[in-house]
Image (cartoon, rainbow, N blue to C red):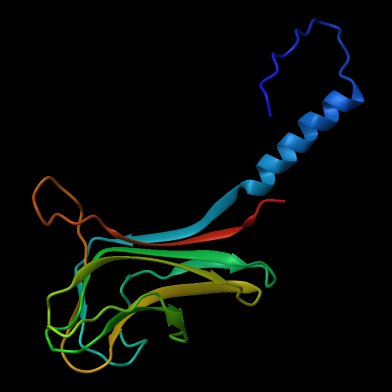
Length: 177
């Protein structure tokens, strides 16, 4: 669409129905494209786990808690600056999304190669989740498929090599209506 120089408006001018409809439609389109942050938690604590059972240990000390309407999909985002597989050959590691009661919702990622402890990757996972109506809590837990300890590394940030930024778990609610 080509740019159109707006006309001048003087005191006492009356907006036409066509002009009002354009403005109203633009506001509605803007409103419908906005997604709101419902809840977020962050940690700077280095986390490691030696479990093969999802739900054994929360990564975040505080669950992300929000009130769901029972029909809308919520967008869940998880970011970790560095996830390292266990120091055992051929072991895979996952960051696993769980409810506040420990029910698994699914793996956000999966890393692992044949040579132990040689792979560290950032993790960014996005999940669309439609929970039942009411208060809902979620968290992330580390898991691996064999032996050893997997690590989720983070920190407060800084200026030195290895000063990782915090891990983050966020829930974005339904579009505004």
